[in-house]
Length: 100
Ligand SMILES: [Zn+2]
Image 1 (cartoon, protein in one colour):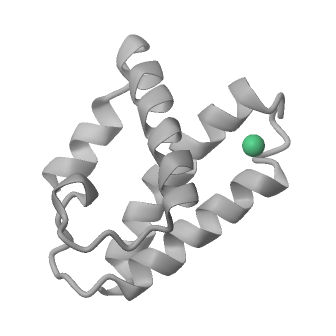
Image 2: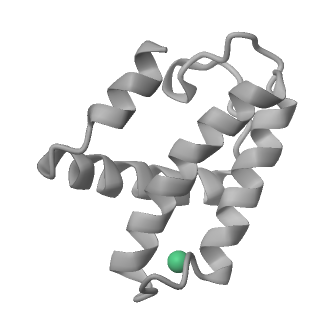
């Protein structure tokens, strides 16, 4: 996968993790905690190694490349932050991202 796509994808991951961290780990404005930074770094590594182009939605992917513990963490992040953004009507940038 090329760097532009990875950067785009990581922007989303980063935003989702930040929201989750703020609400669950009490970090405020200072950016994600060490644990969440680790999750972001892990997500980037998986993405760089993704053998598919275009990358399918992880949900529909045959290759479960995430380690189970990271997968559980990422799922919790996506679920919480997904709802958070929908509630605040902040899906404009998400839709723009998906549509582009
Ligand atoms: Zn955190």
